[in-house]
Each structure stands twice: as structure tokens, then as C-alpha cells.
Image 1: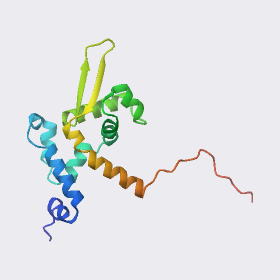
Image 2: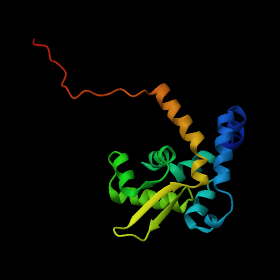
Image 3: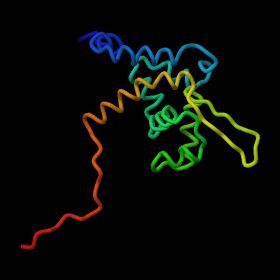
Image 4: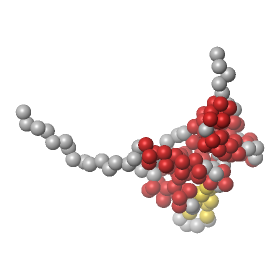
Amino acid sequence: MSNFTPSTELKSADPGFSTFTHNLNRMMETDALAASPEVQAIRAIEAPIARAMELLGDKYSFQILHILYQLDRQRFVELEHQVDGISPRTLSARLKHLERCGLITRRQYATIPPKVEYELTERGRDLATTLNTLETWANKWFPYQQQTNSLPVLEEV
């Protein structure tokens, strides 16, 4: 039986993994967020990739972070329009999760109608390299191909 641990052997084989692990560990450093039960549960996961997936692996989280990275500060309604297929309830849940984990901040203004804006924290901005690498990988290996709505032509027998 091998003593393989993802956090040691893979780190030495891939410098990108080392950077990712370093960034993930920096994000999870002790601060006011460390007291939250959600963050404590994530910190209890030993494998870095499993920790990252618990933190960011739900549907739409990467998209939300990427939009905030590209466009800086965004209002709820703007995010809702930019994330295809997301319901207001799901967007609200994802934003609350990302805020509790210290990746985004929520700024509410005392106006009528209420105005709420979201932006990345330093932790969230620290993910930019990872998001850009993921985007490059997806474009290289799974490039976008526009789908046509036309039905295939059937040959007569």
C-alpha cells in the first residue's frame, strides 16, 4: 500500500498545483471567517482539491466569481442577467455562500429601491490566476461550438 497523499506527491509533480494549493491555503488562513461553522467544516477536509470543490464546486460559483473578476462590482440583477439559467433564489444562495467564505463582499446602500452590490475580496481576487488557467484549458480542449437549431436532413429510402 502506497503512502500517496494528493497534497504532497502531486504538488511536486505540477507547479500549477503547488500555486493552487498555496492560494487555497492562503484563502483559508485564520481570520474572522475561521469561526464560521461552514469554513471550519471546509478546513477539516484534508485533500486540497476536495476542499476547493467544497468551497467552489457548486453550480454557478465559478461563473459568479469570474464575472465579478472581469467586471468588478455588480448588482444582483446584473449578475442574474449574466449567469444563464440561474434563478434568483439560487443566485442569492450562491452569493451568501461566497460571502460567508470571504470571497465576495456585499455592500447595501440605504436607497429606495434598495441597492446592493457585490465585489471580490482579496481572497476572491487571489483566484484570478486559477480562473484564467481554467478558462484557457477549457478553450484549448473543449472550444465553443455554436449549435444550430435546424433539424438533420433525413434521406428518403
